[in-house]
Length: 431
Ligand SMILES: C[S@@+](CC[C@H](N)C(=O)[O-])C[C@H]1O[C@@H](n2cnc3c(N)ncnc32)[C@H](O)[C@@H]1O
Image 1: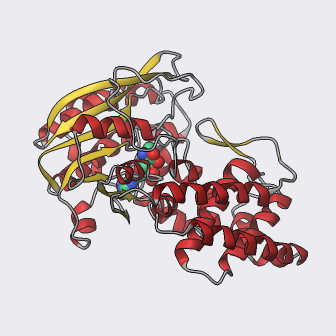
Image 2 (image 1 turned 120 degrees about the vertical axis):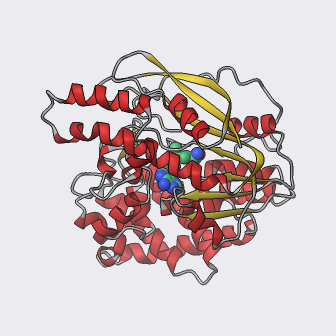
Image 3 (image 1 turned 180 degrees about the horizontal axis):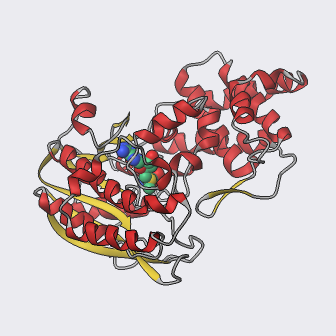
């Protein structure tokens, strides 16, 4: 879930959702391989699956799948599922987390090989500077700005090269890379999340290999557990869910009995910024152009991904509540000089227009009566104007033929802009 505009350190009890039955596997297996600060809890997904009474044989979609929380939870229950995300690094982690065919013994053998290889790489003092990840981080100024200190970076790149040069198949290399990026982000780099990414005190050195090794060992242990269950099948697709027709026709997917997701909220959260180190390590971003093309595929939820050619706002032209919020923002920005503030009304219109396009294009792939859960938060980060996200999405969904079953508050957060409690809701819809 998107926690922008909130103090994410608040204890956040899950409210109102009745306890609906146990998960099959309770210890966070697989989920912990890699999580993002804006991801939601596997338990919430389990509760929604119970509420919808989804059984094996039915298909679930998470159109904003992030690191695959919904997919992993469906698989644990033997339910087939599809996840889509516009961010290739999220797709990478969702993909790895839903491949349970790897042999745990083989993974541990490879870990031993990496230990030997990385020692050789570490002796070659300058070789790592030729690595595309190093070059990108250097060119983008991220080393200078302290995202990661030179010594941990050198060690992480030695592990990366060792993985790349293993004589093994891609799925094993991918699993090992996921363990490496998880270790880089949470153990060896200087980045912190509050929930926006910032650079904390520099870690001048770090035992990258032992952190990495612990993660691979935990992964191997989880693989042993999940290999014993009759899991569902998961498919991960990279793309823009405002264009489901294009995305799904070619994959011949659906129809879906349920949608479970947490889309971006209209807030100043830049998903690509939070994933910049991952994107660099996976060599998915090598320059500004590739970064921009990823942003371009995303719902317009912040002022850093608004483009001249955007037209999603046309989908919500006549929506009175959106117009009212945009008019209020127009009024409040009149006295502001900083240029980003001038884009606030545009973000609101583009965001809800994009979400309408998404709902319209997804609808054709849902069975009649399909149930949908959209986890979204209200916002007030734009000049303290209150944005009742679930309420507006509900009215948009009704315009295009969905029925609103309920807007359920599942927790509240304290806004950093207003110090007031604001709601985080689950919008339950039915086709
Ligand atoms: C709040 S996160 C979802 C987190 C996920 N539930 C998890 O547990 O990891 C929202 C996701 O929506 C994705 N996204 C934004 N715009 C998108 C679009 N147009 N199409 C597909 N995915 C998009 C972002 O990349 C981000 O991963």
